[in-house]
Amino acid sequence: MSERTYRQIVALRLHTCRHCHDSRVYPMLGRVCGTLMVDTDRTCGCIIGVKARLLPFHCPQGKWENGTPNGTTLTTT
Image (cartoon, rainbow, N blue to C red):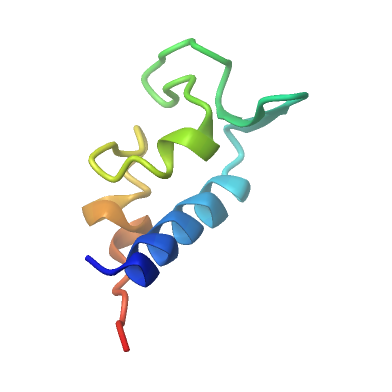
């Protein structure tokens, strides 16, 4: 995977989470999936800025299908 593709995946994940009604912004930590460190059926409690960069991880709501938000196809040039 190229560096450009990696950055695109991370950017798409962050964009998706920015618009998710379950994410919250914590001072000094940034955006978190739900409540920090509380795992529920809809949220994981992770710091999104970190988790989005770890490609093997997934969104608990399935919004990062196949590593990208909702299965978005990435093009490389």
